[in-house]
Length: 496
Image 1 (cartoon, rainbow, N blue to C red):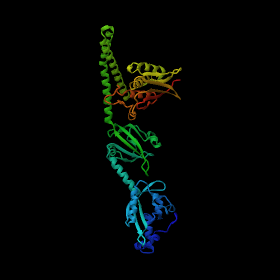
Image 2 (cartoon, rainbow, N blue to C red):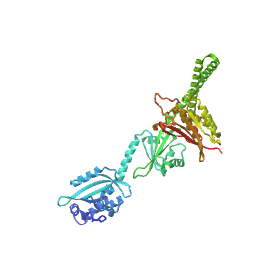
Image 3 (cartoon, rainbow, N blue to C red):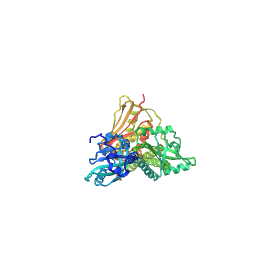
Image 4 (cartoon, one colour):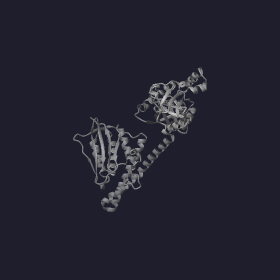
C-alpha cells in the first residue's frame, strides 16, 4: 500500500472482532466511537507499517494521518529507551501474545510524551501474523507528576532549604521540608511568596537583575550571601545558590539552595581575630630580637669576631622573613574584614617596577637570577596606589625568583594596550600544574605541597596581590605550563 493512503476504519479492519464484541449495526459504530474518544489507536501490518491511526493519535503525535500511514512507529521513538525494548515488543506480539507497557514517544514538534500501550496481535486464517492493534493512553501528566514527586522526595532529605520558583513572577511553587519548617515558624504560606520575602534588603527588581545572566545563558549558576529573616525578627547569614533548571517538556524554573552559614561566619571571625592577635603579639618580641641581632652585628663589625657576625646576619635575615610573614597575615586579615584600602593617585610605574626589582635583588642571590625590565623613553604613569603596586610587584617578583631555576631570567613587561596598561611578570621556572592553577589565588595554597618542598612562603602573597589589583579595578590572571614557567598579568588605568 502506498504511503499516505488512509485504509478504512476499525470496523473495516477488524469486522469479525467488532461484531463479536458489540453485535451489529449501531453497536459497531458505538464501540469504534467510544474507542476513538478514549484512546490513541493505531494498526500496523506484518511489515511494521502503520495502516490506520485514529484522530486522537494524529492529534497527540502532531503528524497528519497521511504522514503516519505507510510509515513505521520508529518515527515516534524518543531514543531514550533501549532498542532491546522494541525487539521484545515485536518478539512477543509475533508469537501471538499481547504486550503491555509504557513507551516514551516524540511528537513532530520534538516534544516528548508517554503512552501506556497495549498491543494485540491478529492472525490470518493461515495462522500468520497479519495485523497488530495498538491502544495507547496518554500518561504524560502522570509521569510528570511522578517525576516531580520523586524529585520533591529527594529534596526533602536535604538539610538546607530548597525553593523552586518561576522566572517571570518569582513566585515560589515548591518548598522542601526544611523550607516549610522555616515558613511555618515565620507564619508564612507559599501563596504569593517570592525569594525576596525571605531575604533582607532584596527587592524584586534587584533579584530579577541578578537572574538575568542565568536567563541569558551566560552563567550556569550564581552564589551570593544574604541575611535571612528569623521568627524573632533578627537575621542570620545565608549562602544562596540559584540555578536555572530546564526539565525536558516542562517550563523552565529556578532552584534556590539556601544554606545557613552562621557557624561558618563565626568561625571566620574567630580565625580572623586569632590571626590578628597572634600577629600583633609576635611583633613585640620580634622587634626585641631584631634589635639584639642588630647590636651583635654592629659589635661584630667593630672587630668582636667573624662567627658572631655571621650568626647575627642569619638572625636578621630570618627576623626579616618573620616580619614579612606577619605583615602578610595582617594584610589577609585586612582583606577579610574589608579594611584593605587603596589610595589612588598618579604613579610613575617605571619607578615602582625599578624599585621592586632592586628590592628583590637581595632575595636568594645565590641563584644568580637576572630580572630584566626595559622601560620606554616616555615614563608610564598610571592611576594607582604606589605602596600597593610596589607590594604587588614585590610578591610577583619574589615568587618568580623563588620558583625559577638558577642562572635563569625573569622579565617584567609594561606597555600600552588600547586604553589600558598591560603588565606582566614572566619567569622560566618550574611552572604550575594544571590541577593547582584553579586554586592558586586561594589563601595558604602552594603548588609544591610535598613534605620536601624547596620553596619557602606561606601561600598568602597571591591572595594579597589579587586584592590590590582588584582595588585598582583590574583582575590578575596566570598562564603556566608545568616545567616551562609562568606568566602573571593584569591591567592598570593610565594617567594622562
